[in-house]
Amino acid sequence: MTFERGGMRGCAALLLGLSLSAASAQAPAPTPVSAQTMMRWIAQIEAQGERRPGYAADQWTERWAQRQFQAFGLEQVRLEPVPVMQWTPRRWSLRVWHPQQPQKVLELPSYPVPMSAAGSVEADLRLEAEGVAAEGSILVSRSRLLSMAHSQMRQIARWDFDPLRELDGRVQTLPVPDRFANPLDQAVEARALGLIGILDFPWETDRYFYPYDGKARAIPGVWLSAANGKRLLEFMAQGPTRARLELQRDLVVSMSHNLIGTLPGRSSEWIVIGSHHDGPWQSAVEDASGTALVMAQARYWSRLPREQRPFNLMFLLNGGHMSGGAGLLQFAQVHKAFLQQQVVTEIHLEHAAREMRAQDGQLQATGRPEVRWWFTSFVPRLEEVVTQAICAENLQRSLLMPVEGFPEGSRHPPTDAAFFHPLTPIVSFLTAPMYLFDAQDRLDKVDVDSLEPLTRATIRIIQGLDGVSAAQLREQAYQPPRSTPLPSCAS
Image 1 (cartoon, rainbow, N blue to C red):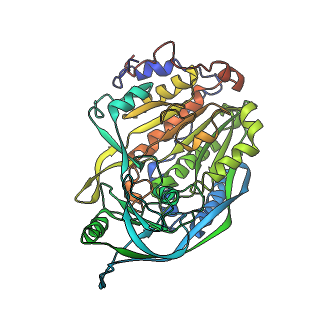
Image 2 (cartoon, rainbow, N blue to C red):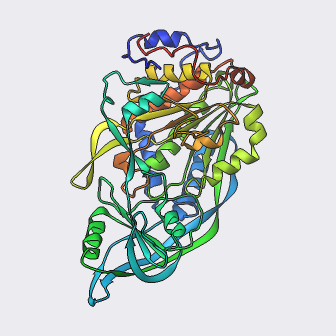
Image 3 (spheres, rainbow, N blue to C red):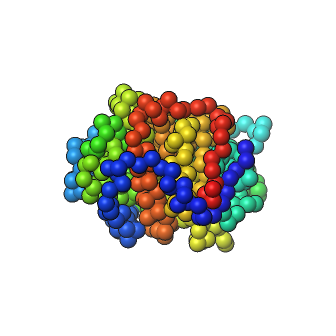
């Protein structure tokens, strides 16, 4: 496929191609929410503390967002309960020694692997390697993050907007293990008694919230930072090594909620705009930023009269993302007929993130936004309004991504919108910064400059679908490849 690129020239011409009805082309619309307001919302959420499902900070966020929806004048504001697994580490420790020299003890700082079991395990250490038996031992495993060259990403993408050619020759580090494997599961399969996972990441951390699928494991495990992992490996190189791994944690079924609010529009059909409100840590990017982007849409559209809203609008903040996507899965199941029959498209907004690089074990900002992925259903009109919105708002470093085939063989996108595909057409905005599941995801990681253009781009996408019914959009669906190329921003 030939990828079309270009600058801002001609974006105005592209916008003229949008089929807006007379009603939506009326008099000046309210000004979208400012970045300053959105950052204030994000800061309020982040200040509550760790926001995992069932935690007090996440419960506060639900109630706070509910009050905001009500203050905006949304209708049918409600909380739908969602059972989640609440995993809470209490105490943990790791001590290693040589049996021949029991007085020579190394105590290493660590952090529990999420969803690992409580327990006290003493056993010999075995370094993970092909052909090495781990049964009855504590397995030591090295984990790296997945990296992908953007030349490869461009081959997967169906369109991109990178007028400055910033992505040429670039390799992106993603926040998931390089083998898409969970070392804790590998240790269980190897019949190990416990796991010590060394995080060979570009920066120093042992605060990595992965896995987050809400499934309890049968053995305890801890993460070590790269530096502490090096200390352990050097200690092991001196001779047979034994360890005691202790972990106390709570694991209970708790209750989270999906927050829903609606606004009536001209059409009898719907657009759903969503994100999730929980996160692994204080998590300003994951996903206090997504929550703020949804709230910005709710506030903007609430200030328009009903006749200027092209569709009924549903604003959705899901719970239980860090518990296997529990809220999204439940919403998709409970509201399946609604999504299949009445929803024109679901727009999902995740992660307004700054790009960071690692230097001397620390994360430093590059001054640029993280690469933007727009997973969009195989529907020409949908693809066109998304690319037009990207052009109009100059959202550089954007890739139009397929909803299937990434990762290879996948039948859904690697985003929260996976739960809505193929029930309804989707537009799923996401960035994947390497620090996404790390405790260093704080306010300084939010790309403030992206907040307003992302908000305006979402408004443009909704306006660009004015007059299109759910049935019409579904009738346009095709199987790739697309018969005609998407125009560049300079067309």
